[in-house]
Structures are given as structure tokens and as C-alpha cells.
Length: 207
Image (cartoon, rainbow, N blue to C red; front, side):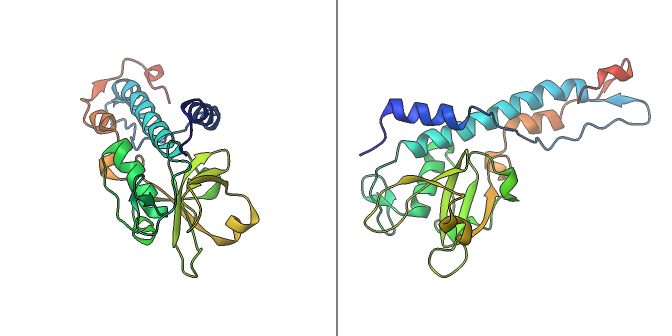
């Protein structure tokens, strides 16, 4: 049984209540002539951050809609059932149009490594549940929770990452939103390509 619309909305709002911090890879440079593109780039980077937040929210919403779907080894769709990597791959395909590798281990090789303290919604979290590293994957939702397809005989569910079972098996996390080229908001590239403008005064720079 899939999560109801009210439940999904409530979970998304709860998980995103604290907001999402996005570190856009834009260097605000100033040359010897005192020129900067900070004034041009700042608004654009803010738009890119909002775009990344929207992407993470879309991922969370798409994933939460699958709560209750039965687990199936090798499953790729809600209709046939989903395994852990099948769930992640399906959610990213639906929310972003990007096709991820099929296995959890292959997914662990893309994106950027993320420390536990820096986890953000949309990050992938990996665990050793089959006696080898990166054998299980889920999508971090925020508030120490992640969604995953656990094992045969069970259904897609939300779990708490700080439970001892998961802590003992945690292998790390990867960030795809803003790190994988296909998932980098195009606005960031627009900011990088923005024409250099002369700064009228030092106060034009706003970090």
C-alpha cells in the first residue's frame, strides 16, 4: 500500500523544515583591477541553490510515494516490486530523468563522498548487509531518516540511520545532487560564465 498524499506531504514538510544548505561550486574572484562577478553571480547562485533544493524535495516526494511497495530481488518498477538499488534508480529516473548504475556498489562510485555530519536530503547512504561493503543503499531524507527497500518479504520503508543496526553496517554516503554533471543545476554554469563586471566599491561584494 503506497503512502497516502497527506502522509507524503507531511513527511516531506517535516524532513525539509530545517531547509537544505547547498554549496554551489562558484568562486567569487577579483582580479588586480578590482573587478568581480560577485554581483552578477550571487543572484544566479541563489537560484541554483533553490533548484537543488527543489530536486532534493522531488526525490524525497517520489521516494515516499513508494512506501509499502513490496521488495523483490532485481525489481525495477513499483508494479513488479523493487530491491534497494532498484528503488534508488527508479526514484532518480522519475524525479530527475537521470539513469543511475543498477547496483548499490556501482552507485557508491559516483558523486561526492559525504561525511555523516554533512548529510543532506537526497544523499545516498550505503550499508554492508550482505557481508560485503556497499551491498545496500537508501536515500537520506533528513532528520536521521532514510528510505530503502529492506529485504525479501518486506516493503519499502523509512528507517532511522542512528539505530545500532545501521550504525554498525554504515559504509558511507555519496552526494549526487549538485555533484553528478547531469544533476548540477544549469544556473551554476551560467554564473560561472557570467561576464565580469567592474565593482564600484568594495561593498559590492556580498558573501
